[in-house]
Amino acid sequence: MKGMTLIVKKTTQLIGGMIFMYGIYVIVHGHLTPGGGFAGGVIIAGSLILVTLAYGGDFMKLIKEEAGTTIIESLATIMVILIATSGFLFGTKIFFNNFLPKGVVGHLISAGVLPLYNVFIGTEVAASIFIIFLSLVIFKEESTQ
Amino acid sequence: MIAYIMCFILFFVGLYGVITRRNLIKIAVSLSIMEISTFLFFALLGYIDGGVAPIVDPADPIKVYVDPLPQALVLTAIVIGLATTAMLMAVIIRLYRKYGTFDIREIKNLRG
Amino acid sequence: MELAISVITGFMILGALYAIHAKDLLSSVIACGIVGYSLVICFLLLKAPDLAIVQIVVDTITLIIMVAVVHDSSRNESYSKLDTQGYISAATIILLIMLLLYFFAVSIKSLDVLGTSSLRMAKYYIEGAAPKSGSANLVTGVVFDFRGYDTMGEAVVLVTAVLGVLTILRIKGKK
Image (cartoon, each protein chain N blue to C red):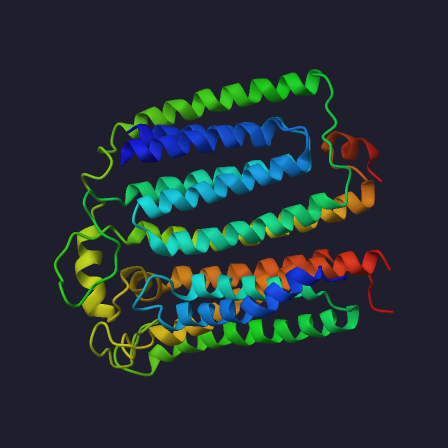
């Protein structure tokens, strides 16, 4: 697909990386400030959609990106279920057990297993929304060839 | 009490759009409006007067917080609404490629 | 607070009525986006910053997908007169609204004035979420620790939606 004009390309070059870093910040500080896994995941997906729309891409590169992103999404979902099941090993044997030490409320490394949950759920949400967008773009490309 | 009645009126406007419109894009837009009215109703249920956002500040701990449970339910529902709307749009694209129109009466008559 | 929320919701009702009755499809889709952005202002007034962040990005992505679908088609809604099917639809919607109005009137009597009393479990969630799960953000503690099954169900629904979209939008099969 064709990219956009020169002004859009220059602006995306300046701010695309910053939106990605802001998404990672919202995910990692999910237990201290408003945000968390879902908000950071959709922000990362938004930045990836912005870069794809501004620069375009030829057909083969988009198909390879879609294949790689499906692998990332499946791995993130498997990791979420593995962390939830590993609560069986420690302490009281229940599902979704919060087994790592909880620390002081308000520090960065605290709240047990919650930051790991935030990271994996954020990756999975970002990959899902990006796959939906890429498959729409590939469908339009394929039917106009 | 007036805010709850306005939420219900917005839900009725969306329901009217789903039932009486013939264009597929209008049906998808009305479904999205119905979902938005539900999110607003849930967020209104948990509000407490004079409360602050539910983030615990370790410096001054005792305050009146807003109820976090309806916010947790709406947070999941917004992302699921996006996935449902995207899947509805994929079906609409396929229908337009095959029949050439967005009108559901004509698609029912063609039946190709 | 109730007056501000009512005014913004009245604005949303007007936008929704325009989105349903517009002749041009692109105007209808943009009006749907404006209704979504007004919801962000309502969330900020109701002290819910998590929801505001998610709603503003999700509404932008929905707007992008809808404009991409509408853009390369004939953008007019062909309007025709009322026939028998139209009369049946109008009668159905009037009947449904009268039925739902009865149930809403019964249920609104048991709701208190906005902001005075909370749900029954609110006290236990507010007092117990920070010490028991260890996080300063109460909504994250409730979503991932007290209600973990809902989050796992949401992850499964997202994977299913992606599988559905990938299956629908395939042209070439294997040779």
